[in-house]
Amino acid sequence: MEEQIIKQVAEHEVRINALESGQKELTHRVEDIHKIATSVELIANNVDHMKSDVSELKTGQADLREDFRQSQQELKDKIKDVESAPDKKTASKLDAIKDKAIWLIAGGLLVYILSQILPNIKW
Image (cartoon, rainbow, N blue to C red; front, top):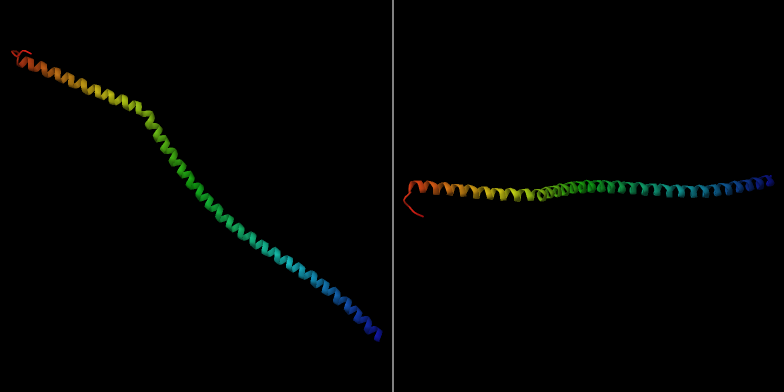
């Protein structure tokens, strides 16, 4: 009977040792799982930050596009002004010539009328 008890105690010790090593293995696995969970949480947080960064980039890109469109329109307007400047100068010169011609004709008519009304005046 003693031998049987010693044998059972030895078997129990083997089982205890096996259970302890299994427990250590499980503890390591739990720690590994905890590390993985922490890493996944960090990744999720980083993804959230990346989403907000991408949103800011999209907003900034839209603002830049609008600024570019406005600048482009301003440049187009300036180019039109530069291109039409010679036409405006020519038109203003023609207007000045027309005004002078009208005054010349009006002055000539006035002199003719006065010379007809007052024929005895010598110039």
